[in-house]
Image 1 (cartoon, rainbow, N blue to C red):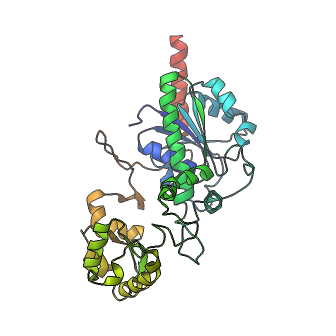
Image 2: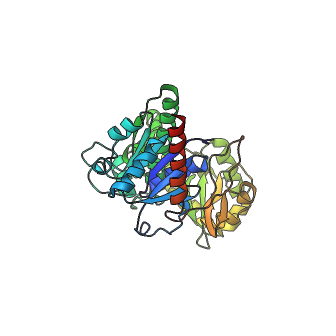
Image 3: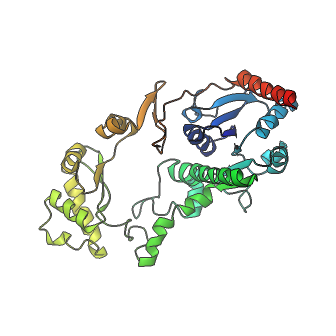
Length: 369
């Protein structure tokens, strides 16, 4: 879908490489400028899943010759992705102003936690810090428990990478129409707060409380996770009355008067305890089998390895083993093209190819002039 679009990624952490991976999955020519002579990011492998489908060139941006190469690459690109603290790219001479002087149509994507211009812009932070201050972490636990979200999903990926990609794509469309580039200021703080708007819409009907465990999706016995006899877990979220009725039927509770008032908040704690006792009486796979294929909105909690082996994945091929690594396939899918796994490069693997390609383009331009 993005064939013919060139994106330069300056090596960074977490959300920026993820955004570049997503664009590469969609067919963009992503060239990652990896740091020359430095080990990969702590905790990350030499060949990262996040680099799949990209080309790699290793440069030292403090070296004049390598910096010039980076500038030439940026001048030839449709978009750039960087994830440094505000001011770092400017110190390198690669801030938006000089880059737009070289390439007026460039879409300049900036990924930070706190934004380019805020009281905390120069302050370090990570996923949990950003979503904590934005309000996105507030409902992420049961009452009385410390809020906790799946690592990176709400902040780095949801509020960060996905908003950077949306901004870049909007910027690319605008540049194609006007010839004018733009700066995309994607902050995890902003994006994770924006993601709350679906939940915040419940305020309009009085179904969102500042107290955890008392909102429409945050407190009911029919909207939570239960532990099973074997230590596994199942999720229940049968919001609509017809689905709730089917849930009660499958659980043998259709005639129980206590369960008939689905939206009576006063009954939720006691009914939660009753369901907890019932689910704890049998295994996760028993409950998964009981509800399989029904509209009762019940599903087991699987690890990625279990999800890979599940019949759902056999049909969708969402989880795949590529180069010996379990990874999720590209999303979304398109009717006009099919995604095939592409290898992840080693650092600097395509350096000479990229330089040769660029030199050939320069000679072609010179000869035609």
